[in-house]
Length: 198
Image 1 (cartoon, rainbow, N blue to C red):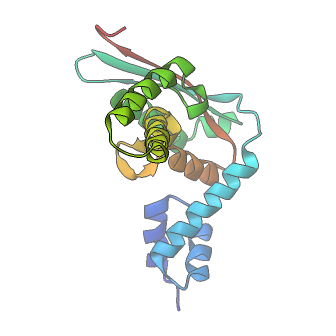
Image 2 (spheres, rainbow, N blue to C red):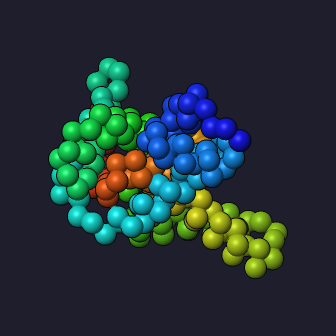
């Protein structure tokens, strides 16, 4: 199949990947746009895995203030070089993350950082719910485990579905950006402030 410049441009518009990467992805998938998108996402995952241990000592602090000034977020996004830190796509991603945090209110960056006391409190609730059901002990255990997993996915930033596109998690978006930028990028920390909320 002949890969046209329009096909390459369409794929680039959808993925923001480089022109040559888009062309190669289309060639490798015989022009199948969906398969090419998946291939580019897999490449982003591979690059992210390779770069995961690199130090991210550069970056930006992005802010988002919700209409009316009653809700605000600050997020620190780290990268390896100031070249990437000054990149428009990197800065746009940082703003999107800040806006997402304002909307989704995560507890931590990843599930390992969710405080044990919070998990224990939720588990107690799930245990009570399981006790009230007339299921077998094995099923009750699975219910509790499943609810804890769901809870962690809802409160850990990297596992949350992006508010602008619920088909992608924040980790998916981060992996795509790492693949595109070619260096390690990490969400270092965030703070969410809301008037009247402790």
